[in-house]
Every structure is written in C-alpha cells, then in structure tokens.
Image 1: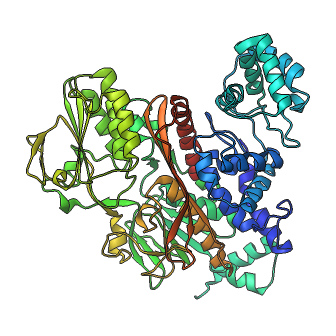
Image 2: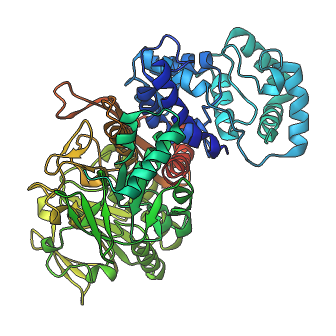
Image 3: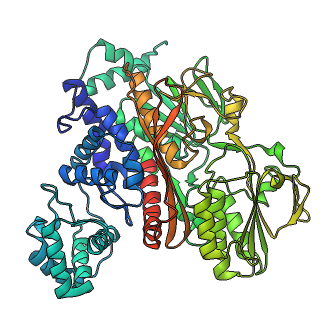
Length: 205
Length: 428
C-alpha cells in the first residue's frame, strides 16, 4: 500500500497552504487544509491512513468519486443508507465538513485490497460484469466517476454486504441498478453474484 | 533560548531545504526539537504525525520497550482467537520517518529548563515535549496486591507479558474452575474492556472447559454498554441461569479490598471471601507515575491540560495526551489517544511555526468482540465547547440493542479492520 504518499502529502498541503492560503481541490467547502486533515484524522482510525483500509472488511475510501463519497456520507447521516456505525458518527459533521472530507478522500490515491479470490469465479465474474454492470461501473469497476462507487479492488466482505442490502431492499438502489441486479440474479442466481465479487476482488496491483 | 553553533548550522540547512527562506524561518528552525515520552498509541501517533506535518521538526521518542502490545484486541489473545504476536508492534516505520527512537526510560522532566533526563543519564532538550505515559496502578488500594504479586495474578491491563501469563493460566486451568475478574471504580483505561474480557474468556471456556465459570466482582454499580453485554451473555453464555458461564456482581460492596495470594482468595468490601483458580485483578488506576513525579497530575491522579493544545496547565511546554490526560467525556481508549495525538501534533507544529493551532474534531471508537461473529461498538465525536474548557459529545453512541445478528456479524469484521487500520495509522 502506498505509504510513500502519506509521507509526502501533508508537507505538500502545508506548502500549498502557505503559498495560496487554500488547497486546490477543496473547492467551495469552508474547511481549511489544516482542519480538513484534522477532520480526516477521525476517519482514518477505522478506514486506515489516507483512507486506504488494510481490511479485512472496512472499505477503502481513498480515490473514490467525490460525488459518490458525499452522497454516501449524507445518506448515512440521514439514515437513508443503512450502516452499523456510520449513521452514528456522521451526525457529528456539518454538510460543509462532509463535502471537505469527500473532496479530500477523492484526491487520495486508491490502493486495491490484497485479498484471496477464486480465479475461476473471477473469470466468470468478469463476463457478468461486462454484461450487467460495465455500462455504469466502467473500466471493469475501476472507474470512480460521476457518483458511482468503485468496485474493483474493494474489500470483498464489504461488497457482499452492500449487495445483500441492495438485494433485500434495506438499501435502495437506483432503478437501473435494481433492474440489472435482478436480471443477473434471476439468470445466474447467488453464484452469479459471488462470481461478480470474486472478479472485483481479483483486481489487485 | 540560546542557539548553539551546531544547531544554527542545522537550522540553516533546514531552512534552505524548505526553500521558503527568510530570517523568521531561520530563527524558528533553530529551535524545533520535540521529545515524545512514551511509545504507546498516543506517543507513536504524535511522533509520526509531527514528522508528516513538518519534516523540519526533529522528533525524538523515548520508550523503554522494543515492542508495544496493544491493549485493544488483547482479550482475543486470552480466548486463543489471536496470537500475542498479532498485537505486537515495533518502531521500525517510525525510525524510517526520521524519528529518533531511544529505548530508555524518562527518569526526570525538568520543565523550567526544558530538559529530560533518562535512566541511562542521557539529557535531552526540547522546545516542546509530548508526554504520553499511559496508566499506572494504585497499588496501595488492595491489601496483599502489588507490582510483584501482579506477576502471579496478572492485571493484563498493560498488554504483553501480562497477557501471556493470564492466557497461560486460563489454558492450564482444569474444567470446572473459577475465573475471577475484579474491576475497579473510578476513571480507568478502557472502561468497557473488563466485560469484553469476561466475554472472551467465557467464549473460551464454553468451547474447552464448559463446567467452568467467570465471576466478575465490580466496584461499579453499572458499566459501559451494559445492556449490550448482558444481552450477549444471555444469548451465548446462559447469563441469569444457575449454570451461567458469567456472573456479574456490581456495586461498592463488591469492591476488592484484599488478596490472599496463598489461598487465592479475595475479600470484598462487604467482607465476602471468594476463591478463584485464575484471578485477574484489575487495580484502580492513575496516570503513569512519572506524571505525578513531575508535578503534572492533580488530586485525581490524572493530568489537567489546556484542551485546545493539550498543554499541561501545570507546566508550560509539556503536552499530555492519551490515558494520562483529563479529556472527559472522551474515553481512555487507544482510538482517543490516536485522535488526541493528531490534534496535539498539529497544535505543537503550529506553535513551533508561530501559527494559531486549528480547531480539531475528536473521535473515539471501541469495538467489543464477544465471539467470532459477534461484536458491537461505541463511537463518539467530540468538539471543544465555546468556552474552551471542556469537550462536548456532538454525535455517537453504542450499537443499538436491537441490532440484527447480521449487523453484529458485520461489526465483528469491522472490529478486526479497525484494529488493523488503527495500528497502521499509529505505527505505520
């Protein structure tokens, strides 16, 4: 995992802070680079330094789409997205702060999780991905664009639970996603979903 | 502060390396020595964070031990779920960050001239000292129990050898044996953890010695996440039934006042005698003893600090973080120490650079693992109140009592992730 980066980044921020008085990428959020780092300090306790999780389950939040991060955080805060702990903690942050956090983590480099997978299932999963998911989760699920969650290289237990929640209706998916999930499930069953997640787990550095 | 010729040259190099030259930086660069005392979660995090925030600040860490064993997850070592080595961390990554690690013990802090003397006689000067001594025990509170007796009747409230001893005793105990845990009153490290420990021990007994039981004698009338623990014990260990694997006896009458080491018998405040095959005595606690010796504690035995910077209210230039400092309602937890260390490192770096420290947000989070697929959590988000003299809990709380088995299972996996990520965030 990219430890190099965590050594370099804060220095860069402070240098930038000195020169510009604000960090590019923070956008309209009111938090200063300094206080964004302090905000992120709490997240890193569970999600790992720079948002890269050592697993086995807690997701990596570095390098995800800022839009996706913000809508997920807001979803936890409102209770719309089910969670174990995130609902309890996000209520402690203002919308501006969640925005600053989303911007911060989206600017950190993603690092794919090193985890076991079944290569045969992963090959089947690749085909299923292309047929059912690639249209939105482009680049084999590696894309972090326009509010979609990054799937490739994410911790598999977390992906399993996210899918479970979408399937059970505990968490609401968009209409398109729900249709695709249903189609995949009807045609390929639980094994199809398992194969899909082995494919995402197989994408490692 | 006098600037030696050598220091001045170092400063010159530092300033030009930053290529942000100018006289003010030169002056600042000349006097930027931070000494961190204590290589636990607070100390290691603070040392690491300062180097990441401002590599021009020289950081020295004083820690007598070569390794640190985390207290969090040490209860899983007792049940045999994990090996002691899995909670052991060293200072290699910290050294790679340019932190000078001295394996020695701070013997004396001289706040007036900003000097620390170690047991080996090394004298270190600091511009700011970050002091993270952790806890010590109030040995005078229990008759017949002291540091030496604790080698036979381990508290295991500082992990490592103590954890290994307690685990060995549990392994050697015959089926049908009695494990006694005594929990103290007052402010303590990881106040929820005696009950997590009882759970992990019961989990072990259930599998290997099902006729045995765990008795908790507790000076407290109530304990953290009590409803969640009792629910788990009812579900898994027959709590409340005559053959329950766990019994909890709480209240001032059950406070431990005496240990008879020869007969392995404890006496409670009410005068009851209880004999145990394994005795885990968790004594009342206070800040690490060097804190009191250096005049940094108040009558409570803990260290009062200015909550904006964690600077001692007793001695300027010394910042105290982790279990030793008074930061309630934040709990005395590894995660809290990590969170405080980040804020403190930021404040120290700001002060050394002539900047106003930024306002911080604090987080503490603790998971209690009961079995392989059963855990729950407590989390808090804290901010400094407007008056600047206390923290306010702004969000958080424990897992809901109605949490599904699915969520308890997920929390067990998140607990193990929390352990991995918190330790990586601390030791690198």
